[in-house]
Amino acid sequence: MLSRDLVWALDPVTWAREALGFDPDAWQAGVLRSDADRQLLLCSRQSGKSTIAALAGLHLALYRPGSLVLLLSPSLRQSSELFRKVATFYGRSQQPVGPEAESTLRLELVSGSRIVSLPGTEQTVRGFSGVDLLIVDEASRVDDALYYAVRPMLAVSNGRLVAMSTPWGKRGFFFHEHSEGAADWHRVMITAEQCPRISPEFLAQERAGLPEAWYRQEYECAFNETEDSVFSYELVMGAVASAVRPLFGGKQ
Image (cartoon, rainbow, N blue to C red):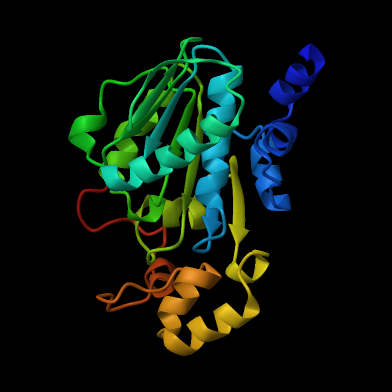
């Protein structure tokens, strides 16, 4: 029993398979086993990104006493849906660590670990510190101000950040981190065709029934131009030259 628990603590994939009866896809196993401090998951709808994030958060809380895991989404309803996945897995986990307190928005374990759902407003998320894992769901739709407000929560703890989403136009921090962000991001992109649970027949129906731009966004992970854009993102960025001095406000 002790050796089994040690294996589960060291390998979240084996834990997911043996304790929960959940067999991750290859990319999901890679996410669970990654030691990257920053992970960016660009995934199609229904590909399993929320499921794997819930597993990552629960495994950390169970096997690292005193851990703090925060679940952040554009709205509290979305955060609570992600937490529901956490709670479901916890119920199936044989509960190696018992609950201290449990509600629809948070789970506190007797080990001192906590998993907390947060509302999606910058004014109401401040106050947390020492965060070990910050999961940002539907990250392309999270306001930049909220993203910038939660990043300092990882400063002292050197905690991990997982941002996951389908695209939502060429705007916001999620797009910029994916296209221009630092090299320390571990980037994963999974289209619907790469998900074994989404059939080619279903995708054919969706392609026929949806506008092309919408289909490419939801299922092919395409960052489309925003509808109110006069110039494309590539055209604007191509016109920017760092060697040219600004007419106003720059050093002469």
